[in-house]
Image (cartoon, rainbow, N blue to C red; front, top):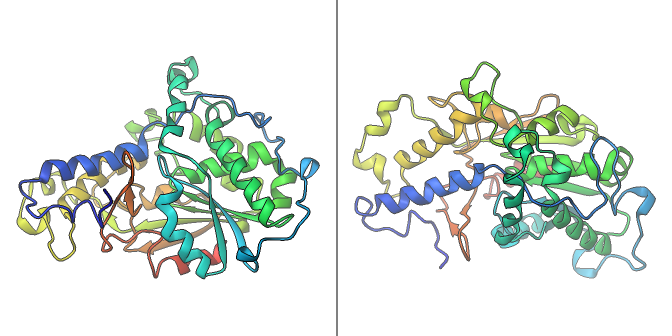
Length: 350
């Protein structure tokens, strides 16, 4: 059952602290479970910097009719969702972007789509940390192709902006470079905008830098497709949120004062938010105490070098927690990249 916020569901926070913490921990786990996938894409994609795609210039087939009336005058945007995110999770964002002149096409992933990652976990490449996108993200690439096909029907021959949320941002980077290729990307992609995407690996000096949660995927993308290559750097924008600061010290997590456990006015728990931030920030940037971020992704992790940067105050990672069936919706006080007042800050990059 949908709720206006998983925290808002509970009238007795002390009694229900464990379920709330489990939900918050689930969000952290879902956002940072290693994302390898199972099958080689059925798209004819290859490794390296040259690839073929339905939307490469050599294979582009234009639709015979113009755009449908309901999208006339809009600009197409393809959304690469966060891990376990579905189109329904972004329905409000889709409506809000439409009011601003954009037609949003989420890549049609389901919760079950992510089960296709399981076989690759059993490969030698997974254990060696040498996974590559073309052999790992096939299920995601196929969903992108499906969304692009719909866009081509509605906007024949028009350029498309890519919008990536969370790890969807670096999946978009990989698809643009590896599948579309340099010629196709520059001919068909208007812009790439990422929201809370963990682009940067942990610093080399961090003990946790040796623990690559992506099992080689992010390193491969950064090494081969740096800073949004092959797009010109002025067409790539990274947006980071600064809505949750990690605890100042470990003992802060032992402070169970009522206002930290449960803020009735905001329907939120600062204690839980700091706990989740600690667990997520530490492996991503090598630190967590006093680190600023969106509750899952530190600011410094979300900003690729040599691209356009935007940091949003009071902005957290997502408005929903994926679950079986409908996602649980977080309270309105938990602002995220798609909240009113924040969309206008980054939509100009699309």
